Length: 202
Picture 1 (cartoon, one colour):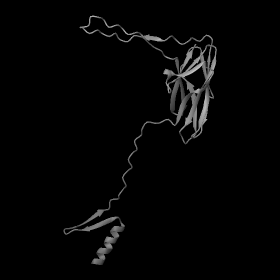
Picture 2 (cartoon, helix red, strand yellow; picture 1 turned 180 degrees about the vertical axis):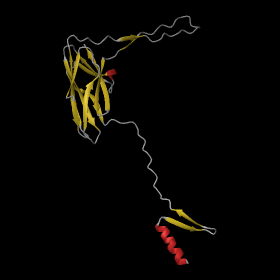
Picture 3 (spheres, rainbow, N blue to C red; picture 1 turned 45 degrees about the vertical axis):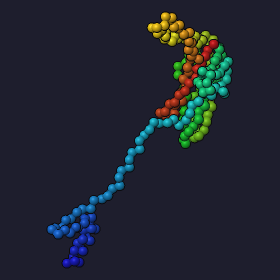
Picture 4 (cartoon, rainbow, N blue to C red; picture 1 turned 120 degrees about the vertical axis):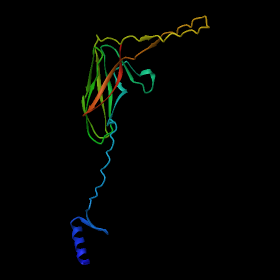
């Protein structure tokens, strides 16, 4: 009897079934396969650009004056040029990628009478590499100079009731924008990054 029961148990085990003996009755329970847990999805964060787009004011040439806006060290570059003149803004592309990047460059809206051309317009940036290119600006003799600074008045101070004398208004404060803001863009596949500079026409 024991030999027969052992043989039946072995046959059922080979068939993927296990037999369990209980005092009342016998049950045939199929073995449940154990599957590893599914991997947790990795949350996707914001996509970071794989290259930098920088305006290098120190290497640019052909302008009567170049300075940072607000006279701050890291202020937006301001390029001053006269009508009928031509200048070149040097733009740098710096790669942070392990892949070759094909990048196209363009500008946004330009002031009336100003032409802009990237040389070259399309570049191939090698992994970890750096490229310097020119944005040539040509200003026609008929171009309009930049508008005069705007004048803004701060709100008037209200005199307190006990004071008989009115509080004098502060002197109007001039808020000057350095020039036309020229936007430049670098596009690589479905990613576009941008920067810009001020252009003052005299």
